[in-house]
Image (tube, rainbow, N blue to C red; front, side, top):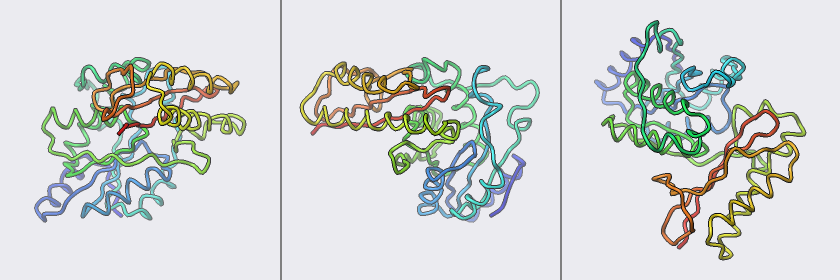
Length: 284
C-alpha cells in the first residue's frame, strides 16, 4: 500500500492508472475506520483493479458548534486496516491543500440537501458535496463507494455525480451493524456504556416499524408516532427527526404504497452524541 499526501501526486497516480487501463475505485472516509469502512474497501477491491481510500476530516462539513476538533482520529490504526482490507493507495491530503488560503468555491445540490439532515445541519451537505467533487476531480475514479447508513448523503452524491457529469458510478453498500444492531459509526466511541446500551433503540424501533407495515399499517404518521414513543422510553435519548420519505426523491410520504420505496430515516441524540439510522421498505 502506498500513502500519498500531495494532490498533484495523487492526480499523477490516477493518470498513470488510466494509461494502464486500470479501473480505480474510491472509498472516501474521514478516518477512525470501523468494519463498515473495511467492507467498503473490500467491495471496491472486488470490482476495481486499484482501490484509493481517502482519509480527510473535512472541516467544511462541520458547523462551528459541531465536533470537528474532537472528531476521533487514529491514522496509525487506520493505515493497518486499509492495508489489510486491500487498499492500493491511501490518500491523506492536508486541509491547507484542499482548502488553501482564500478558498471560496462551494457546490450545493439544491432541494434534497435542505431536508432531513440538511434541516438540522444547514451547511453540512455543502461541505460534503464540495469535498466529494474535489476528490472525484483529484482521483478520477471509475466507481466510488458509500455506506447506506448515510442514506441522504448517498442520494445527494448520486445527484451530484449525475448533474456534473462526473462519469463516476456511485455504489451504495448495505449498513454494517454491531452484533446488537447498532449501526457502525466512528462517533459510537463517544457513548458511555449506559448510553451505548440505550442506543440500540434506534435499530429496534426501525425493526418494529417494519413489522407494523408488514402487518398492514399504511399511514406513515402512525409509524413515526410509534417510533418516537419507543425512542422516548430511553432516558438518554432525544429525537432530532423521524421521517418517512421517498427513498430517491426524499419527498415526504403520507402512506406506504406498493412499489414505492419508503425510506424511514431518523436522527437521535443519545446524551450528547448524535446518531443516525434508517431502513427502506418496499411493499409488493
